[in-house]
Length: 370
Image (cartoon, rainbow, N blue to C red; front, side, top):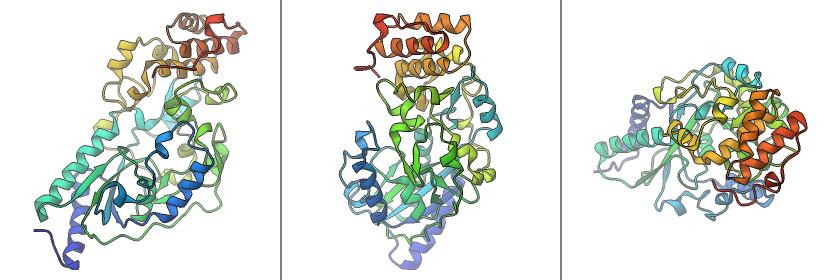
């Protein structure tokens, strides 16, 4: 039977934190369901059109900011974080400094975190059910309209920094978040306080100036959006600013002073696979679609598809050093079936050596296949 006394729920909350640690989470917090402040911020952001093509951000009405509309009878939310940093930050800086190397955001180097966290959250829910009997709940890991960072902030896991990522005084920002919406009246934790102070390192480092003001990110300029969410052509004015970043961008995290406290993850699933942490752009550009699918099995990268993978790498090659090998690879891409790939390969050739785009590579990216 579910507990009925307030003391029982306090004990249950303490037990949930212990179970969370046993399951590999670094921290568990609990929040209530009042996200009115976050709702106002979201609506302002949407009204400014800063979501770009991410129509799903506005597609669910108020379900994102009002948990009980998404999961009826939700009374409290269990928020969990799990560290994912697979290697020291110096390794990332080394890759970024090498124009021939391919930079992949550190969160995507290993196994898809959605699967890892979802399984752990389910185990946590099972432990709760084993203790108190059946209860109403639903677990989320980027799988529904959930304001995970706002919830985590209310649950005391950290504060939302000027770059819009969640920051923790003991762990920085290299961690994933997951939630369990529950009908249990668990006692809420105290929200975290903000410790960004006057620092503006993340604003100053952003390659595309996507952080347009403290706590305000224009996704349409963000490299993570451009390389992952955007379906069509990357705006030409922004292409040179991508450098060698082919999937996501970690610059704002690499420069954040709070990340000096970040710890490497102990999770084997988050370790780099298929040498994605130290591959050259040419090596990855030469992956056929079948190789791409094989090498990204179980990876978050697979969601962008082979065409956008080639699109991103073509831009990075155009931002790198000229060589016969690079030119040959890009010229071969001019014969690709997809206009999206041809267009970006032609742009890269023109940027490297002034080679004009052939007619078949012009006006591309209007109806790309993902």
